[in-house]
Amino acid sequence: MERLPVGVSFPKTAFEVSIEFDEHLKNASTKNLLPIPTGFAELDEILGEGLHPESLMLVGGLPGVGKTIFVMQAARNIAASGKAIACLVCFEHSEVYLYQRLLCMESALGGKIEDAITLNEIRAVMEDEVASLETLLARYAPAHKAWSRFVAYWERLYLIKGHPSKTTLNVLDTYLSHLKTRSERVVLFVDYLQKVPVPFTGVELTPERQIRIVTEGLKNLALSHHVPIVAVAASDAEGLKNERVRFQDLLGGSSVQYEPDVAVMLNRGAENEVAFSVEKNRLGPADVDLQFQFRGPHFAFQARREPFTNVE
Image 1 (cartoon, rainbow, N blue to C red):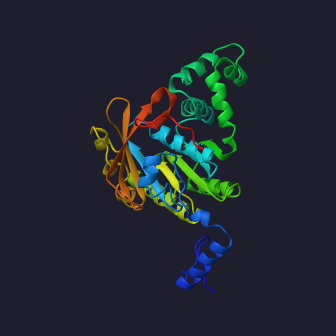
Image 2 (cartoon, one colour; image 1 turned 90 degrees about the horizontal axis):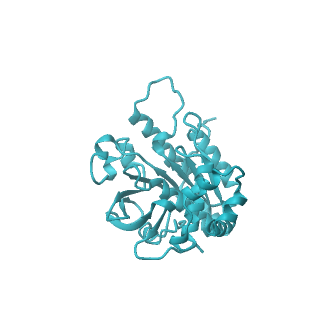
Image 3 (cartoon, rainbow, N blue to C red; image 1 turned 180 degrees about the vertical axis):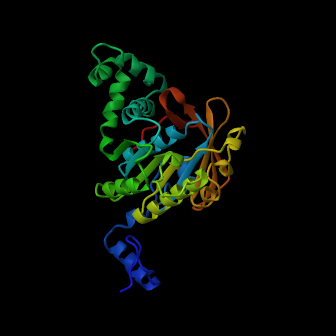
């Protein structure tokens, strides 16, 4: 009997796919085919209403421009919307540190920017001899309000520190299988792509080959689990010398250019502004620049000239 590797199936006829699609309709699971909004309204419009299942988005830009903040805010927006669960795998920061940044972000997104709590204020509480979350919430009213909003969606937002040698593509595959038991709709965020380790293969891998394996692997995970995946991607040394980092400057060569469905590059604009440049978009228009105000102390972006609004 003919055999295929585990996880690989024989090609389906268009007739068989038609039957499968009919089952999707009958089981009322067509919502799984719909895009998931990031909560950045202007960006969602360009992307065709949000992140599409089975798609891979890469987010690039200069260091410190706000790439982690963007993916964290998008994950927060998705969880807060109640339309899906979001998981952020971060190789750069611990879960507790991300939690602190989320409190700062939430206090800005849900209230007046001048009243929003900062990381320095959180750290001031941590320096007390007797410090606790209760102490923090009692001392700062904006933190208490932010926490009250946070609890409404915190079971739909997952955070995990990526391990530099153990959080492989297989681990991400297991994460997605686990998350799919919690919700039909899942978005995975990876910060960042070049940090995902590739197990020892017996052959020395060049950095470009390793990045190619990870990029192709993330796209395959998006396809096999029918989810959107968003990954932060680092730029190469030459690209970092430029005032504006472009899609072609991402580290990894041709596979990084080909595999993603969407590429959004973040670059500094005018004072306190960041340009979100959609340079590749298989789902809609490309070569579009969107301007967002950058609120560094609060780890948040807001639409230019528009007030902060909480996700409904």
